Length: 128
Picture (cartoon, one colour):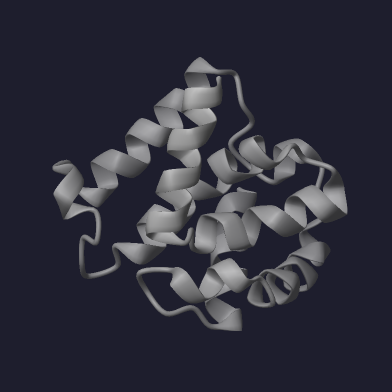
């Protein structure tokens, strides 16, 4: 576990996170969703957003669509909810979540620039 935590810390310092964490943090603080589950939920939607017209994940080899699909499959294997609706988050709370996500320092390190409306679109994608 210590080695795993160390490697995760190295990865965080190298990437400085991004929209997956920026959108997950409000889910944890506002709805008490475990942080790792919130990141997993948001990750496929962020990958799709980031890859709009580009593939910032090309060094990982699969297409961005294949990468997002694989993350979704892993969520299925782990029986982890894949939508905000499954966590009973009211749709009318999405704008407030987007506002909170925009204030997260991790959002500035996303490979694609984020606006408030982009963050709302990512949450909307994760809702259904």
